[in-house]
Length: 185
Length: 101
Image 1 (tube, chains in turn red, cyan):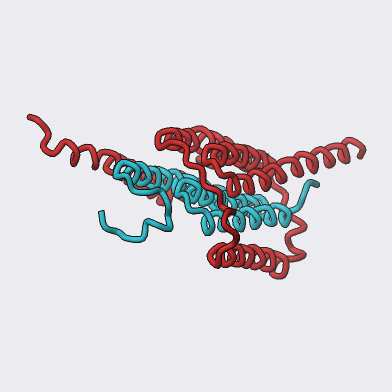
Image 2: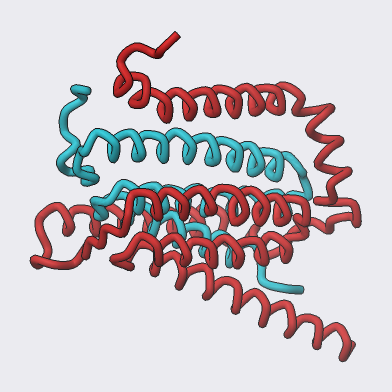
């Protein structure tokens, strides 16, 4: 019993740390003036989200989050920010315009709508969840789902990635061919 | 027992709201893309919380598909930003108001 309560406190402590790191770094991404610092804050956000995924017993998604996002996507972001040079832009200068006020109101409305939808529609039923078995969220579990029930989604995802890679190459190569006019033979 | 599903959903809703605010008020397209990532991650957290809640792996599959789509979106978005930068177009989404090349 004592062991269970200690584990409970530990889970809550880890959850609180990850959740506040997640929310704080999200606010930091939006409010920093330098895009480089925003990207670094987003890496912290993705890392704390991976901790939350682990608490939800989704080990494979947490590993994929760290590998794909913090590993690949953020490196590309930082590379592009370094390539185009630092451009600081302060979002709060010049007083609030009608655009800023409207944006804050719209974002607040989205947040209130989500919270109300969660609180009113699902109120009591969210407090108790099903018991999950040990294999839930392991790579073999995810792989079996991908190759049996969700084979079409798997294949479509691969086509989407292929098309995005082709689009990236075309976008990157376009201006070079126009600058050189005719390629020499 | 750790925190219930509602706590995770509250974090997910807050992340989505903060990301939406960033997309709406920031003018640098790089930070708009970063805020878009926050919105996608909020949706991912809700999907995974529901997958755990219902003991059903479909939500995790959906979250992995969202991750792949987010990676594709970043490739195309950053390609566009680099192409704009090469053409000496100002990187300001308020001033990118025409589609002429």
